[in-house]
Image 1: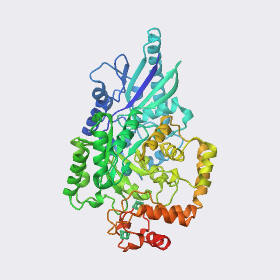
Image 2: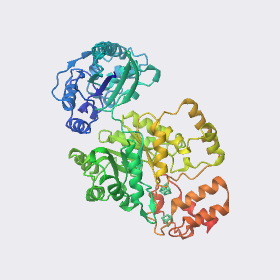
Image 3: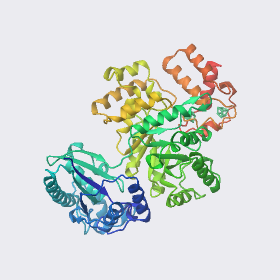
Image 4: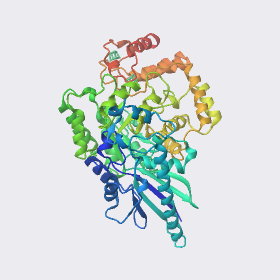
Length: 572
Ligand code: SF4
Ligand code: SF4
C-alpha cells in the first residue's frame, strides 16, 4: 500500500501580487490566480481526488483553489493550518512597513518570539501548525489502517498556505536544514510526501518541470541548415525520458530555431505534453508595433498557439525595461490575460544590483527569471551567479538556468584541470558535473542545455535521470577545479552569437574568441592557427573596421575589438 499526503499551496491573490504580509486576511484569488490554476489543472498535475481524504484551511483562497482543482467535493477544514497572523502588518508591504519600530524589531528577530501587534510570533505559528499537522497525521493514519487489507493507496490532500507548507516540511524533514523560504512552493504548487509505517520517507515537488531543458540555440547542423531529422531524434529521446521544456528565441539563427521547434516538436507532439519558451529581443523594439509583430511572428514560426514561457530577452543595465515608455510590459501582460502567454519573465545578463532594480520595479509582472548560473561564474565579478540567484530568491522568482556549462567550456576543460574530476569519477562527463552543480542551486526550476548532438542529449538525460544534488565533498572538488582554472584567465564568451548579426564584415566572432581561448589554455600556435582557418566563414579578423556594433550586443561585455586585433596579430 502506498501512503501519501499532498500539500498544495493556494493560487495567486492580490496579496501575492503586491508582496504584502498577509495571513489571516481572508483574501480571494486574483483573476490571474484562477486562470493559472485552471491551466495547471488542465495539465493534469494534481492527484486524483477519488477515494482521498480532502482538506482545506477553510480560508476563501484555499476554498476557491480547492474548487478549481477538485470541484464541488466534500472536504473538511483544519483551521490550525491557516497562515500566520500578521496583526497590524496584514496587507502591507515591506516598503510600507520598513522604519516602523515594531516591524523592524519583528523582522530582525532571530529567536522567533517577537509578535507583530495583534498577531502571532513565529514560534506560536510553528506550534499551531505542528498541532494541525499532528491532527492531519492522525487522520491519515486512520486512513492507512482502513486501507491496510484492501491494498488501496492511502491518500490525503490538503490545500493550504505557503508558510504552513514550509513549516510542515521543515518539521517532517529537519535533516534537510532548509530555511523557511526554501520550502515555500509557488502558488498552485506543493509537495507529495510519501510515508512508510507512519514516518515520512521522501517527498517530490508537485509537477516541477524536470530539471533539464532543451536549449535550441545550437541545434544540430547539416551544412548551413539545421538538421531537422537529427533534431527529431534528439527531441524524441528527450521526451521519452520525461523531459518537456524547450527554449528558443526570436533571434536564434535568424528565426530558423523557432521554425525548427515547429518541425521537430510542435508538429509532432500534443501541445499539452511540452512547454515552449521563446524571447522578445526588446533591444530591437523601437515602437510597440515591433513587439507585437515579433510576438506574432514567433507564434507563426513555432505554430505553438501560445507560449508557456515568454521572455524579454537579455535585459541588462542598458536594456533594463524599468521605465518602458512603449508599454511592452503592459502589452505582454494583456497577452497573458488572453492566454497566449502563460508565464512572463526575462533573461538577464548583468550584476545583481541591476537585477534587484528590475525586479523591484516589475516583480508583480514577472513570473520567473532566466540567469547565467555555473560553477565558474558563481563568484565571478561580472556575472555574479550567486548574488543574482539570491536576488531572484528574495523576490520569490523561480530560476531557469542558462549557460550551465558556460558555452561548452566546462565540458572541455584543460587536461590538468579535467584530471581532478576524472580521478574522482572516471565514468562521468565533465559537462555532467556542471549540470548537476547548476541544478543543485536552490530555487532552480530547470537547467537549459544547448544540445547539438544525440550524444549530448543522452549524456544530459543520464546525468539528470538519477539526479543527486552535489554533496559538500563534491563542492570541495569543484573548488579545486575553479582554483586551477583561475590560473588561466579566459575570455568569457558563451558563444551566444548575439554579436554576429550586426557585424558588417560577417566575422565569426565567437569562433575566433574560442580559438584565442584554446591558444591561451594549450599554447600550441600552429594548432590554433589551423583551427582559426577552419573557423573563418565570413571575413578574417583583420577585416574588422572597429565599428563597435558587436560590443553593444555582447552580454558578457567583452572588448571584442581588442580581441579581434589580437586574433589578427596572431593568425592572419
Ligand atoms: S567592431 Fe569589428 S567585429 Fe565588431 S561588428 Fe564591427 S567589424 Fe565586426
Ligand atoms: S562575443 Fe559576446 S555576444 Fe559574441 S558570442 Fe561571445 S558572448 Fe556572445
